[in-house]
Image (tube, rainbow, N blue to C red; front, side):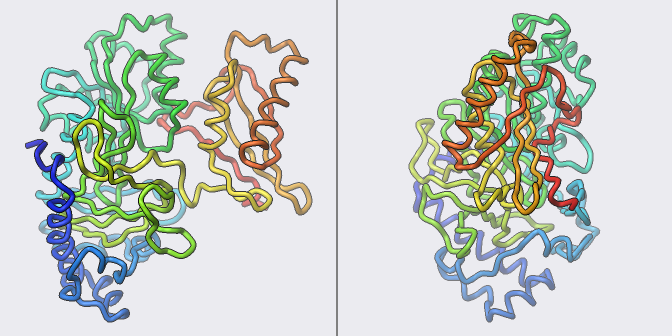
Amino acid sequence: MILRDIERSTRQQLDEIELDRFKWAVGQAYDRVPFYKERFDTVGLRPHHIKSLEDIKHVPFTTKNDLRNNYPFGMLAVAMDDVVRIHASSGTTGKSIVTGYTHNDIQMWSEVMARSLASAGIHRGDVLQNAYDYGLFTGGLGVHYGAEMLGAAVIPLSGGNTQKQLLFMQDFGSTALTCTPSYALFLIETAKEMGMERSALRLRVGLFGAEPWTEGMRQEIEERLGIDALDIYGLCEIIGPGVSVECLEGKNGLHVYEDHFLPEVIDTQTLLPVVPGEKGELVITTLTKEAMPLIRYRTGDITALHIDPCVCGRTMVRMEKVMGRTDDMLIIRGMNVFPSQIESIILRIDGLEPYYQLIVDKKGPLDTLEVQIEVNAQMPFDNIRMLEVLEAKIAEQIEDHLDVKAQVTLLPPRVIDRGEDGKMVRVIDRRKKR
């Protein structure tokens, strides 16, 4: 069920599996999805032209706008009679991104999620507290089905109700936690306010995803919860969570399940593939999905791929933790800045909490950046001189590392909205409203 053997296949074996399934996926898309037939015909591509994995460079990309333009079901490759599940993105900026699943798709998704949880050391007998939202968002149900396939006991609490989350975590003896990393920090903070000691919890491991997070945040979560914190990656368009995951042994990249998802990284300017280890935009092709195959889908996520085997023995390609998205990248006075880069600086400085917001605005023709950060409860907030010195130190480090001038404003604890839905708003770009 977990197919551990395939995760240790040779590169040649994996390439053969990927090529065979890539041919099938291109044929499925061409024969059954009018959008793909028109797109491929435009460039003179037919499924029989695919002879090797190198031929992928001749295949057009699919973008999020393509999915929106075919809303809701124009990208389906099967009849609605064969669709057993529909998920969708939140659609905060325009139409939602809709994806459908056949019964086989749900089984495949459950399998890769079971493999993901097993990579984190979760097993039958564990009690998994699932604090990802259930509903159209794929996180909750994706984890749920995978955990049940693995044989773990699932507590389907979804997001929010934070005090109840902690009480159940204590009373039910939860050993594994799944949620966004920012919600994990919120749980930690709430537990402290409730006077709940870490020793009251049996948590051993957490799988955190749905937003970029840094090594510094991993260290923060691990130290304050006393667990192993692992990254998991996925997106609604492809399948949901379970595209890739870190392993307990390595924590040095997320293993991509190449038997189901073919990854590439491209240069965002030239759109050409980059060499292993070089950062760029992640592109994914689904290899086994029936209802809605996606060919060379531009995810917008910035990462790098590594082909050397992991210490755990798995041989599948590993992707670095996502450092941000192409549409999250801020351009400030011509410099490219990702929130995760500033977060890395913040988490290296004593006295600060991992709660911050970037306020981007304009003063005349020039961009301005204000970084608002909470201090911890031990910081004497009435010591104005100490705060000014610390603000200057942070601003200096931001300029030294990112070549961007920033105004740093330190705030008392519990000022920045925590985002009970599991995700904090990291960037407020007021330039877009002018």
